[in-house]
Image (tube, rainbow, N blue to C red):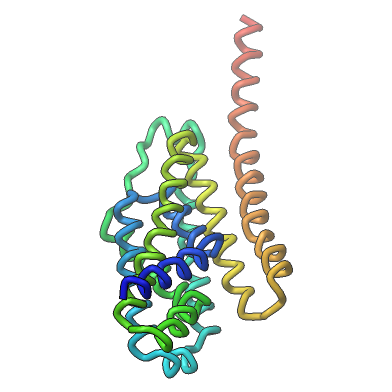
Length: 237
């Protein structure tokens, strides 16, 4: 059983490296408390891998993967847009202290996103394949541990990065990342190929970033004009 646990741990950990789930973990870690994100990943991992080893290929064949991908994409795009709403101009930040996200809501978002992202994902089918050849308990324990370890690694990176980035930049960066992951997930249903999906998905955060930049320029124009007017009045006096 120990060998099965170690095998499953290694397979799932390697499968998660560089996967969208790990990028999601890093992005969530920039916005929410680390223990909330890790708890959400653990809960989703327990559920997904339990499903995989319990019903095996029967559930795997019946999963509506395209529908799940669309729902996941909608959730991630919604989280991205909501996060970008928290981006404030420097002047507004000084007057208003942003409220920290509630742990209960954050946990629900993390669990929902990871649960949907992992259903029908390659890691789930890896667990199904392992469970068909080895004991289900060892596969389940190893798979959960591997997914949580990969998520924990991404969280650690997110925490380290977050310590050196201003709050507004974190909100902006994580919002754009959520848009990218959501767009990539949605495009995956079209089977355009990995490179094409990644390239087209990048258009979503680019468009959002340009929209925010234009909005910031328009908002800053009246302020700059008022400053020049005050300066001219001061010079006249």
